[in-house]
Length: 339
Ligand code: HEM
Image 1 (tube, helix red, strand yellow):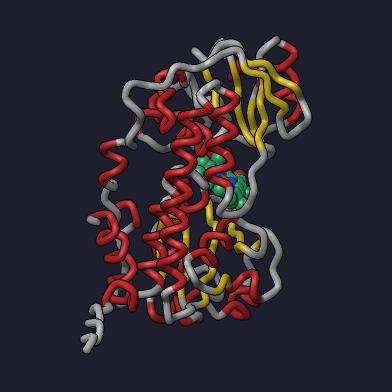
Image 2: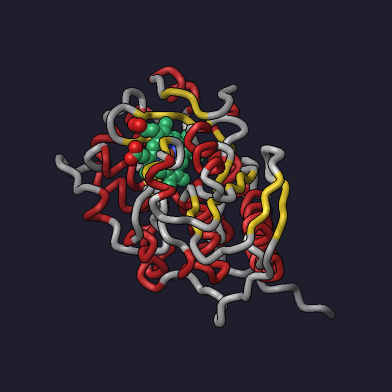
């Protein structure tokens, strides 16, 4: 609840901040979330893996996993899933997108999911490596396989089915299918509950997702992306999809003007890398949109908003409430007395 208030606070107070000549950086505005401090609920005691397991991965490779004592996940969402399944203590290294829970940030780094080096992974003596289709380059993963390490590559649907599908696939590959089933069912019911709440909304704002990161990466989310899945799942119009954009495309002032968003969503680290909210408003076209003019900008943690992880249901619920104030403010209407 507290976390929700903090997030809503960022949203609602931004119009006040916009009047200030120099905006504080996002880092200064956003305190750590309670969950980041506490870490996710993990099963106690941890599940006992039933091994060996043989799976056919999304690339058609038949992979046998005999030992999960030294796991290297190739991305932050997979790391979070393994942790939440109760096998966090078996993770021996992570990529730079593994930011949650905070404990994972202390582990040795293997680089970034899309720019991995085989040497960095092999140096950790992994018993299993597990990632998604976009992990690469392919030659690095081939080198890991050639060293005799099982490598499992999973699909990543760009829909709200992704969290449950990934949880089940990760759990199966690590020999903890029952724990995976339990977690997947819980996460799916949270997602379903958020969607049911969204279905009661009377407003339908146009929402644009911008992925911004450091030196020059500025992308708009369009159709077929996880950001569109989140926005539409929250009962809003994905402005990028609606104006004909497919996938993530480079930002142009024209595309932003055409989108006419009522609300813009940006990842927190991206805003930080632009030097705060002022940097975001300086992206051509942003300040002239209804969202920019009214300060209706929502800032969410990258992994939490885009990651399709065990936290997605809670994130979606938060988004539904932020986008549809009528659902939060509505005073329950008393049922008419039955005569
Ligand atoms: C799903 C949509 C996403 C897209 C389209 C995307 C796209 C990109 C691109 C194009 C880059 C390269 C940026 C550059 O070199 O300047 C990048 C870097 C990065 N992304 Fe994402 N990303 C996505 C999701 C995420 C998520 C969920 C995280 C989780 C924290 C994340 C974390 C990072 C990090 C840490 C880097 C910098 C890697 C480095 O140090 O070189 N991204 N992303």
